[in-house]
Structures are given as structure tokens and as C-alpha cells.
Amino acid sequence: MYWILATIFILIALAVPRYRPIGVVGCVLLGAMLTWGVIQRLRSPADDAGSQVQQRGRPTSPAAAMQVIAPEQVQVENLKMTGGGAPFELSGRIENRSDAQLKSITLLVTRRDCYEGALDPSGCVVLWQDKHWISIAVPPGEARDFSSQVWMRGAAPRSRGTVEDSFTVVAASGERVRPVDDPQSPPQKNP
Image 1: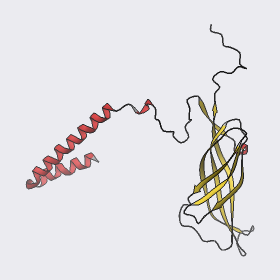
Image 2 (image 1 turned 45 degrees about the horizontal axis):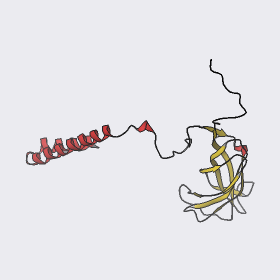
Image 3 (image 1 turned 90 degrees about the horizontal axis):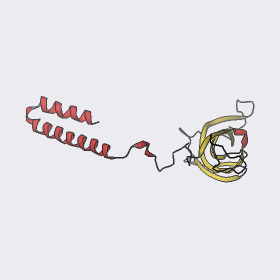
Image 4 (image 1 turned 90 degrees about the vertical axis):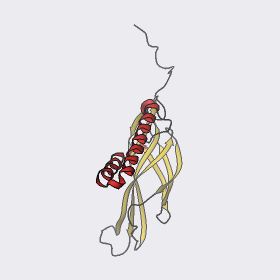
């Protein structure tokens, strides 16, 4: 951006003699802004010093290790999608059957239109299908109710008959916290 502005100011200064003072003033102001930006950048702490904000997909503590959880170890129940589509409200219950804390799941959401005369042998035509990522914290062996907004991409097709929704867990991730002091493990000897 700065280089584009510098080019414009220099072209004005070279091409139009009566606008040279404006071009020179613009270049001086641009140089001052660039110098100020460099000084601020040098004075700020390094980005790798650690961010205070939790980032998506990152462990919440340094003692935690990310772990992929098999979709079969996540049970979803009573899923329903309500609303008119701007956005839909997806709610239900998620049960974690793994030995790690569940942090997020990805659901494949499929909306079908079932009507007489549909070309598909099942009698239903797929209106839309999308993957939806849900952030949730469920400890091992427990279940939680959740509610999440689902935004459909593109224009909402109108249904001719009855709308049926299906949900499939396609991915899940969690974190396993490493024990700090495990009384079951034998003490380590220093050589």
C-alpha cells in the first residue's frame, strides 16, 4: 500500500510541475509514516512471546497434547436443526466416549427434501450438504448439551415436500493432559 502511494506521489511530482509541492509534501509525509511504523515495530515485543488469546485448534495449556479422536467415540443424540436459514440453530447432545477431553467435532449436515415424484429411489432429494465445525469441551466419559448456529452457503433452495435432516460425525479432536505427578509411576533415577 505504501509503495503504491509513493509511486503516485513521485509520478505527480515528475509529471505535473505545478503539483510538485504536493508530491514532495506527500513523499515526506509517507516517509515519516514509514519511519514511525518501523520504530513501533522494533519497540513491540516479538510475536512468538506467546499470545494470551486461545487459538482455534491449539491446546489450552502447555501440558496438553492435541489428539485425534475417532468419530465412533463421539455419540450425538437428539440433533435438530430449526430456524429459517439465516442462520439455522443446531442443538443436541454430545457424549464423549474417549479417554481425552473432547474439544471440537465436525458434523456433516445433510438436508433432504422428500416428496412424491422425486427421481431418487429413496424418495428424497439432497437440498444441501455442508460440514459444520463445533467447538465444545466435554470431559472423557461425560455428555453435554450444545447449541450452535449453522450458516448455509449460497441461496436457500425451497423444499417441495417434507424436510429431513441427517447428521454424521466426520472428525473430532481433543486434548490429553499429561499427568504432572503420577503416584502409580515409579520414581526416575538420575544416572
